[in-house]
Amino acid sequence: MILNMDGTRPIYLQISEWLEREILNGNFESDQKIYSQYQLAEMFTINPATAAKGLTLLVEENILFKKRGLGMFVTSNAKEIIMNKRKNQTLKRLVLEIVTEAKRLNVSKEELIQMINDVNTGEAGE
Image (cartoon, rainbow, N blue to C red; front, side):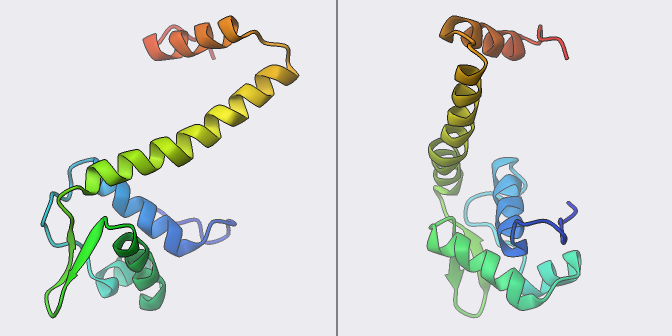
């Protein structure tokens, strides 16, 4: 993964989202040790405090847990937490944007549903 250092999205959020994707993709399983702040800092050439902030965010969301002296580990229900969070935040925001734009363009609900179906079945043209 490459971090966008010039973008508006904070680096610690990019780190936490990347770790979430790694968990969703099965690269980290429940109760498995995850990268330390120092490993993340070295991997992405960032300040360890920034990496720690990304890890702390995941601890606060109960995606990771700390074992004193051993590091950070993936919680048993991390995938479920991440999926629910993304459904309830990311997908809802994207749907709202799509529906708002469809209204501006006078696209009917049926047309919009058909577009979604076409994309889902791979029939949508670019």
